[in-house]
Structure formats: C-alpha cells, structure tokens
Length: 516
Image (cartoon, rainbow, N blue to C red; front, side, top):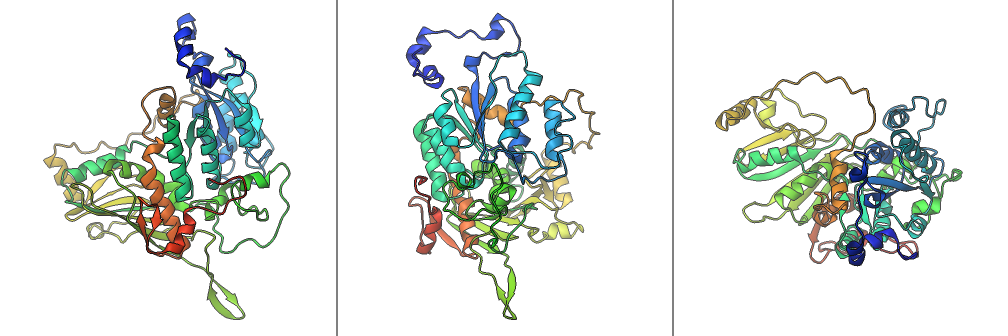
C-alpha cells in the first residue's frame, strides 16, 4: 500500500478490493474477534458527562475501535450531573474498578478522563488484543488532519459546534454520528444534510429511533379508533439545568486547561463564564437549542417519519418572562439571549395525501395541556411527561414517547381490545436480578449505526431523514427568541415570509474562518 494512502481510501478502492482478501480472525481462530481491517475506527469529539454515559456500549462492540478522543477541556473542571457521583460510579462499573477516583469530589469529564476510560476499558475487557493507546486532541481540526485511519466521528459537543465538526468530517468522507440537535440553526442543519448527501456516506442522528410505542399509537389512529388525527400534544419536565434571566456581568478567569476560544468555535468572542459551559449551554440561544431540542427529537422523530411530515408551515410559541426592579419600577426583562423557563410551541403541518392538516404542540418547564374531559371524568391527572393524540372522535394518552398508549376513557380502551381481539396487558413482573458480569453491552441504538457504517442498510437515523424536524425545532427557537411571534415558513425557499427581519436567526454571526 502506498505510504501516503490512508486506510479509509484503501478500503474504498476497487483495485484494492480486487487484489486483497481480508481473512477475519474468526476463520483463523478466536470467536467474536473482528480483524483490525474490518473495524470502524472512531474518534469521539466531545467527552463530557453525556458522552461518558454513552461510551460503554460503543467500547463493548468488537466492530468499533475508539482510537482518539477530543475535548477543549483537558481536566474537566465544572461538569454537572443529575445525581451525586452518578457519573463516577458508572465509570467504575464500566471499567470494573470500584476504587476509580476515590477521594475526588469533582464530576469526571473532559479529555484526560476520556482517554483514561477508553484505555482502562480496553485493558480490562480486551487486553489480549494489541493496540496503541487512545490519542488525545484539544482541536478537532488537528485530529482530523493527523488521524488518517479514523473512519467515523461521533460529535458530542455543545450544540453550536455540531455543524462545524460534522461538515469537516463529512468533507473527508467520514461516517458521522451527532447527538441532538443536528445543528442549532436552520441553515446549518440543512448544510450538514446536504454535505451528507454529497458525501454519500452512512450517517446517524443519535436521538432517532424506530419508535415502537409511537407506532402502536399511530396504528390505533390508522384503525379509526379516534377518527381523523388533528393534534399531537407532547410535554416534558425539562429543563433540568439552570436558566438565566440576564447575561453574566462578572468575568471569572478561564479554568486551567480549558480552551475558551476553541469552545466558542464559530461564535463571536465574549468573556468566559461558567454559566455558558458544560450542561448550561442548553439555556442560551447562541449555544443551545432549549428543551425542545434536548428532548423533542427523542419523542417526535418517529412521528415525523411515520406520518411523512414535511417542514411546518407555521410555528408560534408562548414563552414565560421574568421581571426586575429598576428605579423602583417593575419592568419586564426583554430577553433575546436565553431560553425561557417554560413555554408552549405550536407547529402547524399542511395536509398530505389522505392525512388532514395537523398541529403538534410542545410544552416544557412544568406546563402541560389541559386535562382531557375523558380523563377528568375518571378523576385522572396528566403525568409529569406525556403524549396525547387528539382526533375528531377520541383521544389516545401515553408516556412521553407514547409508552403504553391507551384510549381514554378506560371503557373505550376495553371495548377497543375486545373488538380487535387484543388481550388484556399482563401484570408487571418483578425485576430480574442483574447479571453479576457488569461488562457493558452494545445497545440497539449503537447497533443500528454500526451496521450501517459497516456497509449495511442506512440506519433509521440517517441525516437525510432529518430535514423537516430540524426546521421545526430550530424555528421554535426563533419564535421563542422573538417573544412568541408566529413565523410563516416557506421551506422550499428557506425563508420566513411574514417577518423578514427574523431570517437573520436562520444562521449566526460567525467568527472569521468558521463560516458554514
């Protein structure tokens, strides 16, 4: 093989395919072993707490080799978590080391922790396989330039950098995995989708799913159980991170080992503040996508796919606001920089085929739809999170992702089961005792992109399916930023037609050299 030809290029060469035959080790001996030349070589860009939660199943796959990690934070100061020592204890189980970071109180995360996890996992669970240590980079551009054998990149950074990193990898012909959102600007998300189309490589959007529970509800709709579907209501208990009514005024020093300029990436310069970084980034229009981007992709992705939804024709919202006192006068803070503590969003979709026009409503911050009359008659309440399908002849109520969808009232569900020969649900069974072996297993979500990246069918989370939901979520953010204004959307022209001044928010002001 020529020395200036990397492995990815070699494997895609028809001449090489005709000349060489790679014999998997399973033929030579060693069950479950995948030859190095057959592996997906993965670089993880962004190694915060969410990346740590997800890395075990990836490391467990014999089809994947994590060869590099990248993070602008070398030492991981200031990370947040949902429960005390949740992240640390998860890592201990993952690498089978109950004493890992004993006596360290800080939440683990960042570059050095990422390398330590990868190397410790492989040493523990795959120590018989020869490998060099996991490489580390602060700048993803340097990683992409130097790591010639990397075939796939997983992007787990704050939302405002998703597009820049994805585009750089796609332009090199790499497979790309991105967490939600694909980008936090309409035009950036569209650029990523078009780059994936041009690159003709397999991609995967991590919050996507096949939506078994959503399908169950929509199958009930298709059977005529509630007549024509008119509305879908979806509510979340997010946000689970601080919300900020004002822009930070103080300027604390940048923590040692933290590259603030690289963290900003495409965004214009501003003073460092911990209110922007780590989990907090979700609160800001510049850096995040709010609760709807954080959770709405999980619940609504299957809805968009199964109903064949195009981009919405209009989006409007009702955000909460905060007041302050100035010169003994109570005044409302005019906030176009951070997401509200709670909101509702209404997205309208045009009729398509036999499906009539549809409205999807999103609620967060503790707001929920009104309790349906059918539930109120049974003295019922709406759960903290849920999904409600409203037809012109009935309603279906389920969990946040439509788990266990039920016609309401209960008598209607019993009649539906009887008419369709559906048995009564079995009572819940006691939980089985966990296996003693705490080695991570490959999740079905990871299995989907692994199969696609190895040449199988495109995954259910392929970027080319993401256009309509990306438009919807990012338009919701613009409506909220404008105090709830209704936006009329021309998807073909990529223009807001009723408020021309709002089109500036379809993109951002870029730092020189970072334009998308």
